[in-house]
Length: 254
Image (cartoon, rainbow, N blue to C red; front, side, top):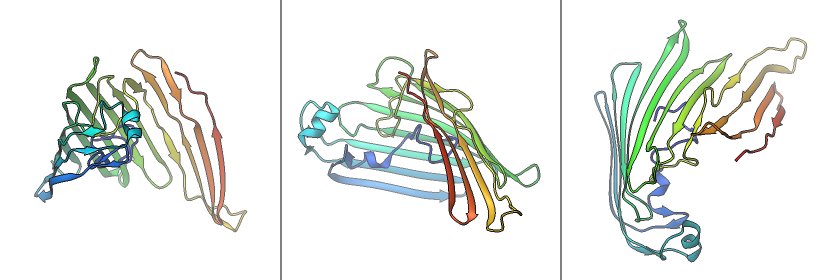
């Protein structure tokens, strides 16, 4: 949804493993419809599934705090539509409805935009993204809205990205994945730098060098710092596999 990286672990509005599985237990599916298509500049994806009532193990009942081991059958829906305005700009929307535990009424709606080019400074890649989403239904008190901005510069000698994301404390995508609600990550939330290749004339065995640095910070909605992920630096020299790693562990703050 327009996050800095497509594999971002911070927020996944729809996580397909939430359909047919509940905390690792298989949930039978009575029927389902899946549609994927591309028509002109329109992209469409729809998944609609009806699950069957089933009994889950006692361990899952305890882990999830279920009222009983019987999980009723329920309907789970996810739909995504996007439109390519031109070769650079894509705008999309997503809608999900349902609760894998069949306990709550939950709907997520979101919109995102991604602008990308391979002609930045004549021949460089650049991608800018933005997203916002909300959940409605049986959710807790507080803000039901989340939003984010990202910038990505994935190029040969310099590969870097930065993003800022805000997650309301009542943003609960039950068909998605949000590990920690009610926090904001300031810009830059995950800056990364990379440099390659670098010829090393004095060492004939080495063709290139690679160095990366990553840092992540998170704050709750009151401005207090939640934790700071370890700062990580890595160096690589090739073609021999010689890796140099350095990790600075930083204490969690709760």
